[in-house]
Length: 547
Image (cartoon, rainbow, N blue to C red; front, side, top):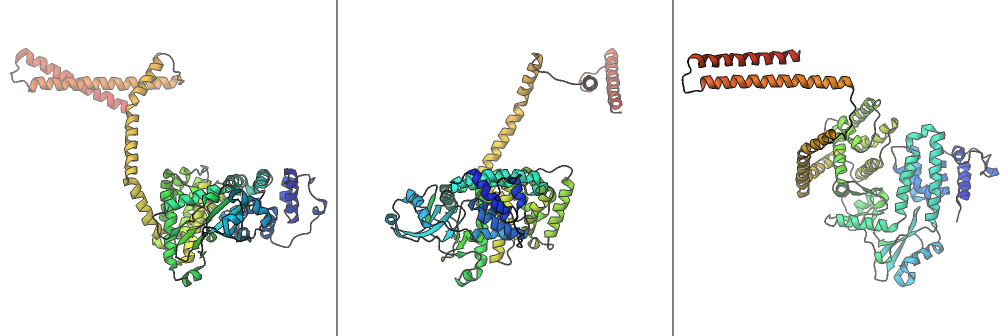
């Protein structure tokens, strides 16, 4: 097992080897951990992006996986860097079978007794595990995913080093803070530790299978739990071709436009109905089977959206297609994006320009939603505004499925396909039994809040009477409040008295069936006159108060 100190030395050597002495300085400021023969390294003629990719490969699985995460953040880094990082998906060397077999035996026992056939050459090698093709004794063809030996200990050590590197890089190179290195490492740490538990991936697959049990043409592999656990996952082997292999799919006799529509509908359901979606839908994780089904693979990365956030995301997508900047910014704030007041107008201008630039014509179908969504992180990063992981994950997924949709159907249009679906989602949410139940509950909550006001006031007054409440108010403010209350009370009292006297005198004079004559008549007239005078005086006070 490699100790943390020795691992520091390995990382520093590799960084210096590929010309990243700045990174080495961040880890080893005084150069005490560097090998002597690496202190004077010749200049490498390869591009900085290629050297970065080669360095990550040599640094091992943790750094390879981190490079893949950076590749998924396509809007945050230069395109040349992203292209190099994407190569990391297919360039991870396999671990020998002799090191893999003991781990597999922990879960399945004797390999020859469980499997009729087990191909010992892996069909895929990733940063965390390797996948083998096998046939169970019962005849089912399966894919067996086995975790790399020692990967947990190595990742734990590497994560401590990555966290230290990120903090030092932000301190030494302020210009790189826009990429939020510490935030990226934190998100990566959470994600990779989840992916180390293969049983979680199996449960995710079962969850998707349940959600799509009534959705024709969408497939998720069956999990064989008798042989699966945290470090081994045995699942149904899915035959098929990559979803971006358009010509082969056509040769198989299937309509690529129909497959694009089906896949897009599946993702809309995942995001806006189920709130549980595949977070890494690159073409390698989507296959078209010989039956024409669209099969999903690799469920280590999933996103979760609560119902109340689904509503915000719907508004966000519609605001992009409508070019509504104010609603877009409002949605960002509800999702945790924090705008500095001094920058808000400039950010709105940038977003408005971005939305206008995405508009290719006067009709919705001409709107480039993918271009608009893809530019959002770039605009926010320009103003050093951190993008919450949940928001970034959703935007990334939408851009990825748009790319796949365009591969399968050159005329694929997000707005035309998404708007009717999102409208139906909103309608169903408002008028479904659960939606009405929530609305009723909200009404009752509001009613209870209103009815609780008298009791709240009563408790407050009781505390004031008992001397349990202390209120600090400036003397001038108390005098102003007292004067205002006194004036209002006088006006109200005079007005009420005047109005009452006028009304009562009128009733006495005009409503009586008995003729009023003599002294009684004149008393009534005097009272009527006094009431009118008081009413006029009250009106005068009111008018004077307004002035």
